[in-house]
View: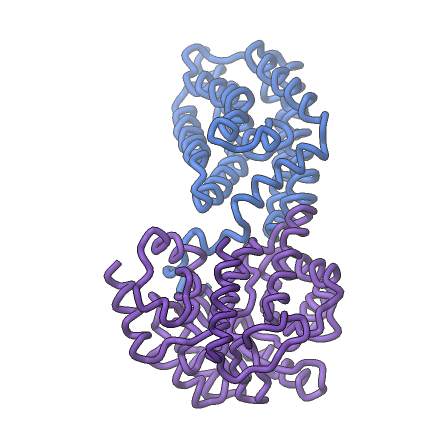
Length: 305
Length: 229
């Protein structure tokens, strides 16, 4: 029911002409334009909400769970999503994504984002990851948790120069290694950085987000719900009255809209194992976004809960 | 690992509880009726420990070694490794434990010697072993897990480790630490995994490890049969 309500909401917002600059995606139904932001280094636009795979897609050989993940991906693409994120660290997630992509006949709008996560020998790992996904090449490769970034980044830039990769980035999570991330961000021409940013974890606001914007690096935000903790924390609490002004029908959308409305943020990558949740999450890619004043009100509201 | 103090237990959990429990459900379906054979083997281990003799000690050790080998290959390496890349290392650990059980329990026949009078650790060991074989498998279903995912001694790692701790402690003579290290480590690792999943069975594993350690230390102060005589 939540998904249907949100669809109606999106349609009404479309009628009001509330969407920002957008381009239609081939698999997205004809309706409200999905909100996108440009990757600064290329101008390519990406929807504000992507799909993470940490834990949720690590289902091993379980055929029913693999099919369920494929349905999550189907819903994600149907709602206009593009960026799917994974890592060799995420167990069977890459294989499960590859399984889902094959079942969906490799949707053209896929933006494949993966990582290199090894102390040495990144090339072999990247090739293994590519085979698991079943893609010709990755759109984005990031150095996972900055592990051996000194070795990996030059090779990733070589791949990009050779046309075997479109974008290069680095990641961290849960507020770790921000000093080192700042150092790399200042010294290297990164296309993307990925870090943890949500309504309660806002450490990145002070230095990294403004720096990323200045350096032309698009920011992907992981742990948007603190692995579900924020949803559990707020789920029984009432939404703030002003949530309706930006078309939010539930806490997930409000929490995501807070994240993606930061000027430096390109997208958030919530992970889920449920198709109805992915539809709800993608709802944050439609309608109005909070302005700076409303962002402050959201923080004040949740900090009082 | 940088900034290690910022990590929580849940940061190391790679899968959801649902996926973990489904793993056992699918595993049980795939290996049926091996569970029936494992249950009979567990009863045989208890009988051998209750009526110790050199021959029965060897039989118990063979069953325990076979159980650790089975779990290493059929569960850890083939199943658990699909969602946890550390499971391959765990499988090697289980294989080493199996080899140690063969060496100590079969070749050196250390499980069948008569017990000294008043050897409390041996008694505690029997209770721990009986718990691992007869009671622990039922905790999951009693806590709301599917019966199809029941974890049985001989084919699942947790009850196998608990029962082995008990069996080793029930043997006469000094504590055999080389046989206790891997089961105790496993109780810690698996207990931490369950704790991260908020599965209250973690406390059983932690308690088994602590009781085994305590019992083993007490065995050090228990006179050996030769000195007692």
